[in-house]
Image (cartoon, rainbow, N blue to C red; front, top):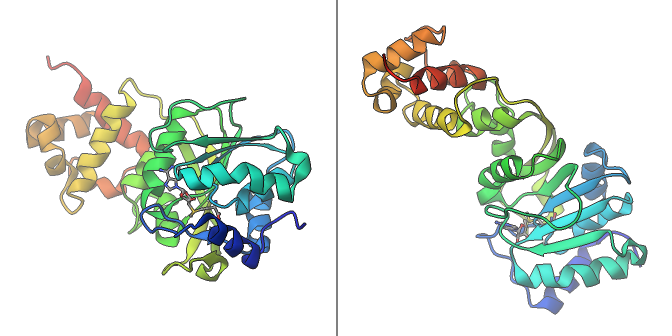
Length: 284
Ligand code: SAM
């Protein structure tokens, strides 16, 4: 039996399970072995890795990851798919025994994983929750230092956007707290079943130190949320609610070494952190 899934085998597995892929859970499965091998190669997975995979689905990518000799911890929310995965992987790669751990859980709230701590994240993320899932596993499992995720193309561009770019926003600035992101490839919708309406992109993530600041991550994220909530306004107006007044916001922005007429879309995460630090200072 082939090591990876081909389109007809994948469809047969779905039929045997009585699976009706849902949009709510972003169930679009990769049916192209070349795409799986490309993802695994770009992710630079090796036999020493412990890979965290979110949303293994019918096992397309899981099999590609196991083929490298790596250990895989796969978190799947759909009990039907989580239950079927061990048998699928065992029949395609009988020697994988003991290298796969399947966890039936919601990746948006999961707080612990079985087995050794993950070294990498590799996932074809469910579209509608890709950003919250990614931010959650970055915060919750700091051991993984490199990752490769497939997301909707538009989201890939947002994640990798630099300050000042049209698509720079909350996901870009929050992700930058944890990691550098680069879009490394695009993937056509034709490699999926069911075929989604949009193309996908592959984003490479490299863990980095968060900005050095006395403000907490939550305080910095509140500033980011407020800044982009009213992105057309000058930052001092957008932060007026958080600071108590536009004058207080202006003072904090100036104390952070920035021009109070700046717009939030021009600032990087370290600059948001510097403002959050000023806002968090006791008055006096
Ligand atoms: N990895 C498979 C592939 O490449 O063919 C499936 C990817 S599919 C885009 C997304 C998968 O994530 C589905 O299997 C879906 O059931 C699962 N999923 C959706 N929401 C989830 C969540 N909150 N936590 C864990 N898995 C989730």
